[in-house]
Length: 85
Length: 367
Ligand code: SF4
Image 1 (spheres, protein in one colour):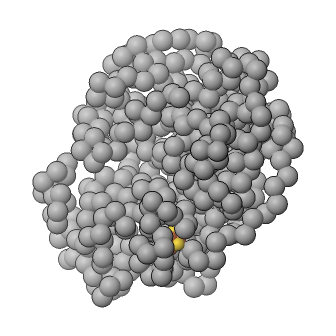
Image 2: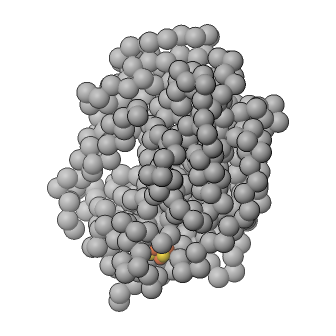
Image 3: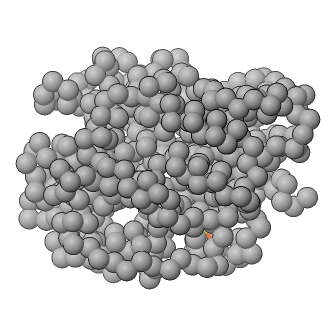
């Protein structure tokens, strides 16, 4: 649960006020609703480091892809698949 | 050196290992704080690659490992209240409380849900107005902004059926507690990259200075860890004790401003009992006065007696770097991931489970 996983911001899904935004982030195909409050500078197509449903920083694309591949190879991205029960 | 071909950059791994070997002339003990780093060091066989003079000990940076027995009992108490839905990150469910774990409480009928994010718990509260939804808010500084944000969000939605059971822990006070212990043998720290992504690195300068201890903010991939170890050993061999940032691609000196503001808005610094270690002053976050309606301890007037810890578990000594998992007489015998005696055997980020799963990590202890 301590990991932050990089993914690509593909859509802004809600803008509740000036700062409280949510977006859809794709993690190698798995899509998640992510809160964008901490990354006001983030735009569509940016790569974000996401921790427990909240983006904590904008990261370089190349870097993000390599990190994601590493995490996937190590079997560390399963937490994204936790169902809402 | 297994898994080597899978590394992002195998040549760099070899190069860093060579450089570390070339410069190491004395025995040094380094502690990585973060459980994610422990997991990565063990799983990738890095402990086996390091020169014999370097000993890695594994710090308390795994929320599953340090959440106290009493707080687990509090979570179980809440989960067993009628009309309460208790939400938690999955890893917390198997941690033993004083009588049972959340998983056992769930089997007995308590409504416990595993969620990926505290913000999902706010949604759950919104769609279940007749229930009280409580999120079990564990974690280090990395997780604190998300948990704080869930409170801010619930407040802005006007929800009066959402609260959190805060059990936040903070890295710098724990480092001080470890370094302040006379028995400690730690020469340098690898600080946790994602914690610093949030908080920045300013808090570490006084610690490095006071204890004359190099601190290198480090990522969690093999190349990051090896580079972090190299930077720390270079300082030690030169007699320096600086704060350095290996993980500059994610960590800025000032951290994430919005995240820090959100934390300050909702939380206040409080004392915290760490499982295995005991009370560390000002080492946690609790929900502040302004948001007290979102504090499950206040809302449900919880009054759980302080629970005894299992004396057979030596997790405290392990997390302070005084012992290695295999020095615990219960390791792999009475204590296994399927029936953990102590918390570090529960999560794969706990040192005991990491050693158990990846038996290649025999190093120093068996020599
Ligand atoms: S092996 Fe089990 S009992 Fe021993 S320290 Fe680790 S968690 Fe505790």
